[in-house]
Structures are given as structure tokens and as C-alpha cells.
Length: 110
Length: 116
Image 1 (cartoon, rainbow over the protein chains, first blue to last red):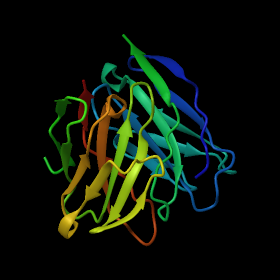
Image 2: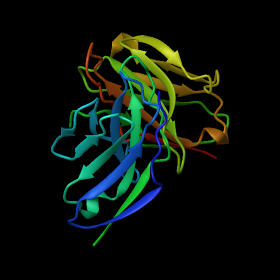
Image 3: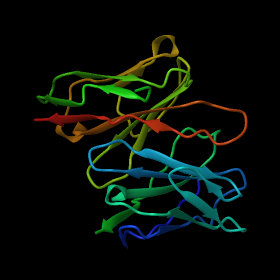
């Protein structure tokens, strides 16, 4: 699986859009980009994933660059409950393990 | 709640004792994974099942660890002769393998093991 690089921490004001970047310059053609988040004392929560096209669901939007070397997770209207560690992972179905980096600690400030 | 369920949530044991954890995956999911997480780190892969077959086991996993998934439903993870270094949160995840398209892993809230 390709390695990913994320900033260690970010702040965002409550009610604003939180944009979390991720670099995955060595991603292969059949690896998906997955985003998870982990709130203290809970298991990782799946947010969204995509291959080439931008994706949106009820939680977030995922923007993948055309060359697929980077992506951005967008939380459109951040709330205090979005404070968590966010992980970006490159993964393909034929593999069996997700390789986790250190993630980005996102702090939403009132 | 039809998510992944793990029991117990917390386990405190003395060094040298055996412990067993249980995971109940999402019912239609055919893949089941065990991960381990220590403070400040991302989860670390331990082992993986497709239905009842254990297809992969991390090289980092000592032979004191064993996992089973009888009948391809729930799974158990046993640690024999526990050591203080085994203290961690043990996470279970499940997914539905598909021929095409991404298959997200869905995680339980883990079992926190403390070895004294």
C-alpha cells in the first residue's frame, strides 16, 4: 500500500469548513483513498473513500487531484464533535491490511 | 445497533494469565480483522479472516496470540501468558468483500487490555 503524509495537527473554527490535506504520491492505479477518524476512546470511524472521482456523502466530501497524488477531505460545517484524529489511507481490496500513519489531529474551536 | 460489537470493553489481568476477547462483526460481512492500537499510534494489523479461514497473520504477532472464527461468524482472540507489553486496545473490524469497488472496514470500539 502507498504511504500517505498528513499534517500532524490543524485548527478550524466551529461552523467553518475544515479542509484536511493528504499526500499519496506513490499511490497505485487500483488503490482507493480512504478517510477514517477516531474520537478518543472509540474505534476508527469510516468517513468516505474514492478512487478517481470526487465523492460526497452525508459526512464529508473527498476531492482527489487528477494525478491522484493528493486529496482533501472537506467537512463542510465543522462542529465541536468533529474534533478527532483523521487518517488518510491508500488501500486496495486485494490487500488485507490498512497501513495507518499518525493522522491529523483536528481541533474545532468555538 | 448493527455495528461491530466487542466484548469486554475493558480487561485488567495479571502478567502470565490468559485472556480471550470476542468480536461480533456486522452480520453480512465475510471479512474480519484484528488490529492493535497503543497510545498515540495508528492501529497495527494483527490478523485477517475471510469467512472461517485465517488468511494472514502479522509477523509481529507472537505465538502466544491465537485467533479463531468458527463458522465464519464471531471471532475470538486469545492471548496466552500475557506480558505487560501486550497492554493495548484490541480492535476488531469487518468488511464485505466485493469484486469491484472499495470495501470499507467498519471497526468496533475495541477491548482495552491492561496487564499488571
